Amino acid sequence: MAASNSVRVAAAQMTSFDDIDANFSTCSRLVKEAVSAGAKMLCFPENFSYVGGLSGDSLLIAEPLDGPIMQKYCSLAREYGIWLSLGGFPEKGHDDAHLRNTHVVIDDAGNIRSTYSKIHMFDVDVPGGAVYKESSFTEPGMDIAAVDSPIGRLGLTVCYDLRFPELYQQLRFHHDAQVILVPAAFTRVTGQAHWEILLRARAIETQCYIVASSQAGKHNEIRESYGETLIIDPWGTVVGRLPDRLSTGITIADIDFSLIDSVRAKMPIAKHRKPFDFWRPASE
Image 1: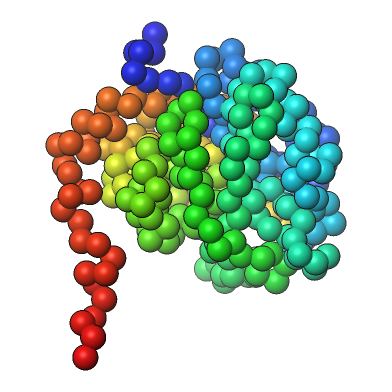
Image 2: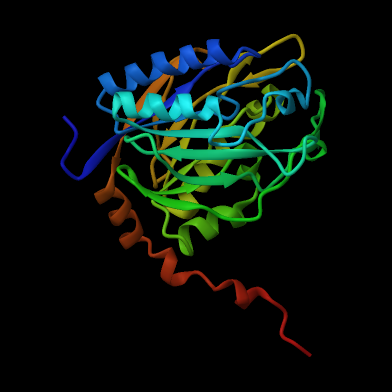
């Protein structure tokens, strides 16, 4: 039984395809599992609603947040009375050639509580893998987002953001995050090398829970995701992990608020850290 000072969260792992209805069906099944497990919130991976065959295919199905795709997910949250983190939704951009990679948080009444558009674009030549240029069809976001929820104060990020600790520092020390969400679709090569170690580092240096929901396995002939959905506590311990790195399913863990307080009290890095201004060179 979860202690009274804790609340249960679920993280989903799935393999999305270029079929919006099939992906929604998988998400619906995972929502039922999370509710049965007593979770107050379920976090989905990046691209939960759609993964196309070619880079930029998401432009073809990009919609505003009040469009039919997101509204179905709002209805799902309302029907089952659970909060949802929907990370990496192809939101229609300012023109037909661009979308926003948007992380949407929905409450248990089906209302959108917060949105965050991914700031860091994945323009990378993966060693031994493909070349990606997310900025060719995606508008980068400009704003940090944090929001209160039943599982604590959430900091919102998406996938490649994980490599930029400044964002996580801002979420913890300027926006009071207790739990940071990292929905992702890491490539197999980069995931194998860096996924878990970066997530654990972010948990340790922010003293936050990290909930990292991942796409897993082959989406099509050219696209494959690493998987390994994880929930990590503020001490850097993995407290939730699917038994199979490539399976579809959920892992659950209890967000223990007393543990957050204890770790932060015993190692008070918030008091010891230097403000950002400290590191600027003195003016001439």
